[in-house]
Length: 210
Image (cartoon, rainbow, N blue to C red; front, side):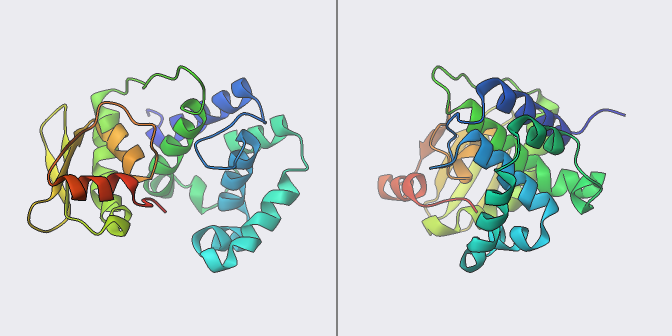
């Protein structure tokens, strides 16, 4: 059985984290590579900390657990992330549902914070998995912009409406790049925007993501 995209992105993130080192910057403002790894470990292994990630008012719970983990050796933390404990996140259906976009985005948070980064080439099957996921997740991710949004695959021409309305912003590109945009990352490649200029600006500069 082939390894899922979520699992491959987890392994790729771990390899990249070790390659760049614990103090390397990320696209998550103020976070180092070590901060990013501890965030993912808290999300999967610390129930109260995970609540703090999801609920801003309880963010202190996540920060406390991240600080505790940060006292540990970076290599050991990466290995814990590489070989997750048996939690709901480790179950294949849950892994695919909750980790595919999470690990793709955070892997790129490490890669694209490095000088001279280049977009990776994902095969069409992986792009289609990302497309299926962002067609659903994107509906919530674009809400902060408050404008109608349509996304279009540049490789197949398929479209999806994320927010209904007249004169939408149409974002065209590979699903992987659309994912990064909708998760609030500015380091994207090859995207094209059509629609009213003011609405395009609102989409591009709003606080998108989770």
